[in-house]
Length: 415
Ligand code: ADP
Ligand code: MG
Image (cartoon, rainbow, N blue to C red):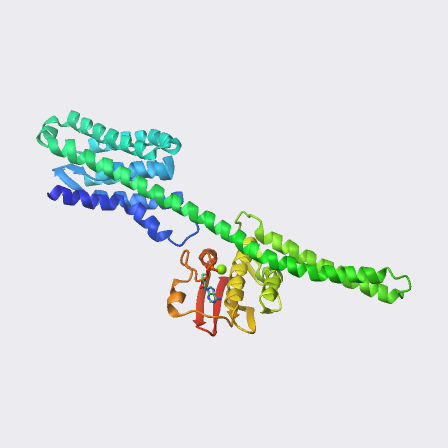
């Protein structure tokens, strides 16, 4: 029964990439990348080999084929090469009679995995490809070993006929299946966050349309006055100037609004946080007005430069202001105040509201996926925003009291 125990340990190592994916990417609106696969597979291979089973002096057995197959499927050819090099070096270091045969077998697993990965990507039934791979790997490693040392294989027939094939089969199937599932869940989540953006934009749109009606009424009133021929020149100029200013303001608000909704390419550039903040507040003021919430800004004298994607930053600010306004729905004189300041190396943005606040439990869950206390909430706004801020090297701290209000303090390193 010892062999079963040891095989379970190998399973554990083989599942390392999957487990780390779930831990590391849990709250991220981002899918895995190649480096992640390379690092976790290298670690998994190292552990598997270090704690391998000694089948016979000099022969070791571990999850290497599972890790190789998985690494190539999700990390590509380059990952396979890196794993092969790691294996060869470590295997030579460990030494023993089985080292050359081991290296030969894994090299052919590497080649076969590259071929399998072509099929895997295109297949409708991916599990079938995994299972065929598992069978092929068991047969070919068995045959290699038999050719090299028939006596040994014959005297351990059960191990090589049952345990080893079963281990590869289940291991490969399980790891690829679980990982595939986690990755497609993550893709779904990323799509949701995109939708969340559209939804936030949609909410604001209603209030914006409402807000734009006022200047239109004002401008059409002035146009009627201007039609009157007896108007003195100075009055005429004044009305035209007011109308132009109103139109300009309307145009700004609308173009800022459109800028927030558009898809962007996530490039970090030198960005003026103050400028983005002012533009976003312009867009959010109508939403505040509609809900009887005032928005004010305390700002520094000069621009505040950070390295960020301006569109992403705007989206983050929208999320915070929108939440703050929504927190104030039930208070009489809702107020959201934003203040931007500098402290040595950081920009500090504080967003304070006098809304419903949060208890400790809610505060702790803030920013985790799908946490929302609103009937029509998605719980994605803050998940996205926290992630963006952390990716900029920033921090977020929260200070909230039930029925009193909430304060978010965000720091972002200056450019
Ligand atoms: P959503 O707004 O869709 O619910 P968010 O991720 O934007 O999702 O916010 C998650 C939850 O955090 C909200 O449902 C709310 O309970 C809480 N929250 C966020 N900001 C505030 C705030 N300013 N005041 C009180 N609660 C807040
Ligand atoms: Mg929200």
